Length: 348
Image (cartoon, rainbow, N blue to C red; front, top):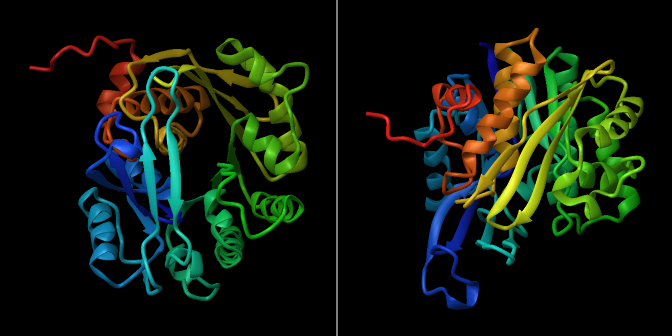
């Protein structure tokens, strides 16, 4: 496979042990992760050569974030060094009827102060087949959005396949109003060949809603067909897109979710089986693991979208069993689950 590039912010994640609340914590577990870095780790685990592009502070904490990516097999020689600090987020893990909480501390981070021209995108995309960004990157700051736009323009000029996970984050879009946010995301997404997003992403970024169904009231009983109208509206708005994909998460509780996905290619809609994910270990990074699996699947099975979609859902289902941001599973483990073996028996 040819190389994939992802671009975004990696952060220091601090979380109380187990299911403790912030107010109960005397110590915090340390993990490094972020939307695009998580995708890169998934791809590296699947044997895909991948570069992660970001901006890190030249201090010990920045070095730790870089080393975390390197030890997972991700190429880090395109990282830009500079700025004041690494972004941080605090995670309180929910259970049963108590949802998880995230508190961001990423103002003035190195990535938030990146500027267009800091990355030599023509050099980055030389010999690259695929470029991935998420809606988190332009949400960080105007300059980060500008750098992302610079990247997608160069990637498009060089014939690189471009994908996005729309990833709406209400707590991040603080530097502009909703109209400006829509303008930024519309321009960036217009360059994309593959678009991933759920119903909230489509509504908050583009005012696109499922027709004839309320996702909030239907809960985990929502059928995949309900999202056909979202996919069709997305393709009408973004004619360059060849595939629009939606993840279907039903939140029965913080510890029990259903999980599936659909893919629309402009003519037909494909659907996966629905997984019951009970006793969730860590759901953070679930969407990133889906995207990593999807990119791998579309590269590995370019003529078989159903297989690619099934791989993505199975990979992300397994991520819910793994502590931390990134999905640390192998191709064989994903294929085993795809084949119907969810027994969890010891491999001897």
